[in-house]
Image 1 (cartoon, helix red, strand yellow):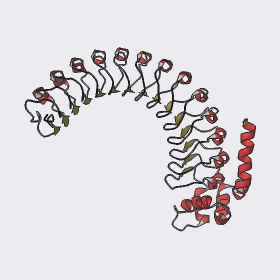
Image 2 (cartoon, rainbow, N blue to C red):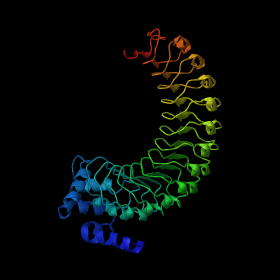
Image 3 (spheres, rainbow, N blue to C red):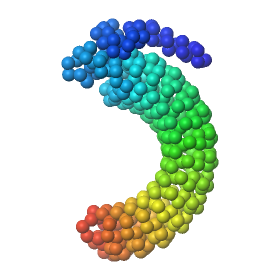
Image 4 (cartoon, rainbow, N blue to C red):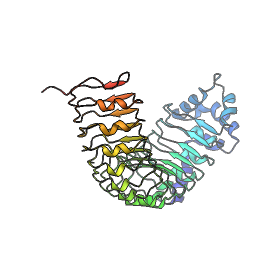
Length: 389
C-alpha cells in the first residue's frame, strides 16, 4: 500500500467517521473543543466517554471552562482512563506533548491532526497499526511499550526522534530504524529479534536495551562507540568480543546468557554497574581492573576463586549467590560494601566478613556454616541452614 493511499484512507476516515471533529479542527483549539464538547451527543459513545473523562479534570464540568485550558495547554496527560477513542483530541492542534498510556486505544488516525507533537506516549494500549504516526515528523520521543506492534516501517521518516521505546511488542525487523540517525536512547527489549545489523547505522546511541530477544550474534554493537548503558539479558550470547572497545560503557547487563569467557570486558574501565548473573563463568580475573565498579551481580555461575574481586575497592553491592565459593577472605578488603549475597555456596567460616563495617545486609543462607551466628551484629542478616537430608 503506497503512502498516498494510506494518507487518503486516514483523511477519509476522519471525514466519514468523525465529521464533527474534522469540521472543527480548522478552528482555533479553544472554540473547536468547546463546540465539540457541547455537541458531543453526535459523537460515538467511545468519543463521548473520552470527553467526559477530560471534563473530569474540572470541578464545574463546564465545556467552555474546560476549553479555555485544554485548548491552550501544550501538554496533555490522559493515562490510565480506560479510553478507547482519542478522536476528541484531533481539535487540540496546539498540543506538543501527549500521554495516553495505559488505555485501550486501537486507532491512531486522530493524531494526524496534531502536527506539533514532539513527545508522545502510547504505551500499554492495544495497537497493531501505527501507520498514522508517519505524519508526526516533529516527534522527538515516542513510547510504544507493551502493544502488539510488528511493523516499524511507519517510523522510518521520524528523523527527529532521539528516544524510542518499542519494548514488549512483536518486532522482528529493525531495518526501518536505519534512517533515525539522531536516536540516542533505544528500548527494544522483549521482542522477537534475531538480527540486529541495522543498529550498526545508529552511531549516536547511548542507551540500548536488547534483553529478552533471541540474539546470538552481537557483532553490530562494535559500531556503537558512544554506548553508555547496554542491556543484553536473556538471549543466547556466547561471544562478547564485540563489546571490547565500548569504553564509554558505565552500565552493562548480560545476565541469563551462555557466557564462560569474559576476557573482552577487561578494558571497560568506566563500568560502575555490571550484571553477569546466570551464566557459566568460572574465571573472574578479567574483572580485576574494573576499579570503578560499585554494583556487581555474579549470581548463579560456576565461581570458586573470588580473589580478583579484592581489587575492586568501590564495590557497594555484590551478589555471589549460587556459586561454589569456599573462602570469603578476599572480600574482607572491600570496605565500601553495603550489601553482600553469598547464599548457596560452600562457605564454612564467615568470620573474615567482620571487617566490613559499612555492611547493612548479608545473606549466608544455605551454606555449611560451622557457626550459624551472623558474623556482624546489628545488620539485616540471613543464615538459614542447609536442609537436613
